[in-house]
Image (tube, rainbow, N blue to C red; front, side, top):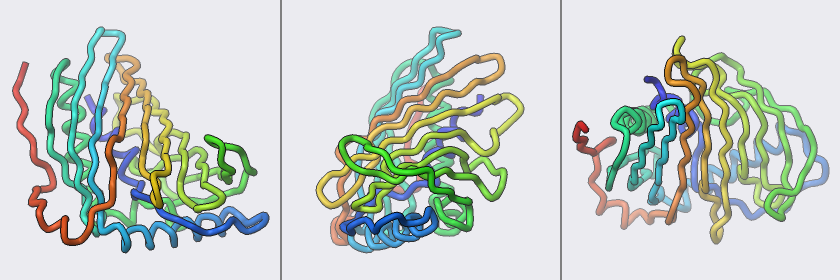
Length: 248
């Protein structure tokens, strides 16, 4: 079952938190919006010095009437490398193993040597402006996104970029390449919300059509995300993946 790498692929290309305080320019091009978004993201990384948070994973497979639930603490280094520690887990063992695989893969691909291959920028994607729309009461630019390469850590679809802060606010799409023969399609949505000066991930829903297993849905809630000061970061000593798992 390859759901772990699917979930990791959805998260690996995104940097959080996202900060921005600029006023939107009139009728910018898609490339101009992306450039400003990337600049704000760079400022965010410098100011926030990483972040901490909690994720709640729920995996559901209706064909086999199976469910998995896992709560994970998250620490992100200033360089973007992710560290995870499982706080609790219950339910379907195969689903828990899939979530574990996702965490291990995400930890690996967020290392500095891998991050350039997964970022939402012009090196990895071609962009075309669709227009503007209201999203959660705020104006946003809606942009069509086409991957430059057919790779599992890239996606095709649409993004919403907040018109005031130039922060990524929503993604809808599918993986540019499924991770194996066993996975037919993967569709997902990714939501962000503003908290103070920063935009943090809020929720993710992905639906994978997997041979034999059928449709499997993974919902992720992102809780208590906050910037991590450089001094506080020194108190965290996590390996890229720390967890223990008991077979059920």
